[in-house]
Length: 476
Image (cartoon, rainbow, N blue to C red; front, side):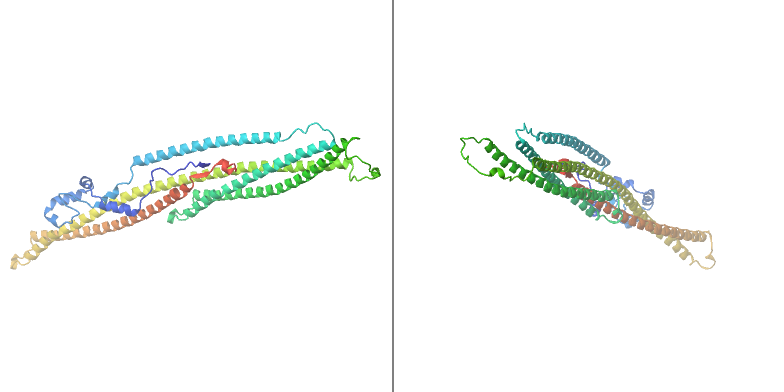
């Protein structure tokens, strides 16, 4: 069974579309006339009302009746509403809380399960000790002792072998989380430009790799110790079984001799047998040999039991450490995604305002160009009047008041044209700056979209599941 992590991809995918999609929708959406009129400058209405005769020469972008504007103003509208954003956040909160509650319940149940199983194992180990019973003779007593110790060492060897298998399964379970963490680090290397930062997520991912590898090293070390201890347990078991076999043979012979009678079959004369002494040991050395075998086996069982306890504690500690770091990485991912999302939203807001300002600046440039065109005819009229009045004959060629008025009018119109040209150049320079800002914002939006895709879609989707505590402790 695998425990699902508390950070799940939301059911509705709210991630940034490509910039080309925004541009195409910006160009194809027809503008609303009443909204477009809201962005008209007062100078536009004023100019459009004073000189209607020149409206036929104005580009189709400006008409006095319909007041059309460029269709790309639709990009000023955002893709999502604040209500969508709020609902998405609330959904994420509820999902996160449900996942945490589920993880907490599973953790409590698992801890209770571990405690119950440990108590059951202890009782089973205590019940494996059998009552040897009443000793009939020394051989029967030591045979019973040896048989009991053989059973204990076999059970301990089996228990150690089972713990060793659990440790191997737990070690195998760590490979997938390690691979996921390394893939997350690899995917995050694909971040672009300013987003390629050594943030908390990367630090926690590197720490997670270190934690998993450290746990794997400790597990492999205990596996080696368990393998060596199994060899010692089997050697002690072999010595006990050989001594027990000798005791069984000796007990069978002595028991047969004990039941011999005068009428028993096989009774005969064996002259001089009393002078032979084929014994190889004394009662003291005989009992000490068996006692040493039992003590040696008990020592190996104690070492094996201690090693099993260490492995049990190691499995619990390593699973806790890996789960804790897994949750830390997920929290860092969530925080980083929220930061990137906020930055993306701010960039989108600034981009919308920049697009609006570009539109208004373009309208200003068109107004300045129209104003310049509007000054051409008055200048022509004034200069033509001056030129015509130079043809007055003789003394009629007088520098009268109309002459001074015409000269002032020409100079004033030329000064106006000069100022309008200067303002036109400033507006065009401002438009270029706005366009460069727009390109920068769009590029940064693409960077943020790429980062969100890597963190949310690539990394978090791989981190949806993590081995449960029973799997990390080798039970399943």
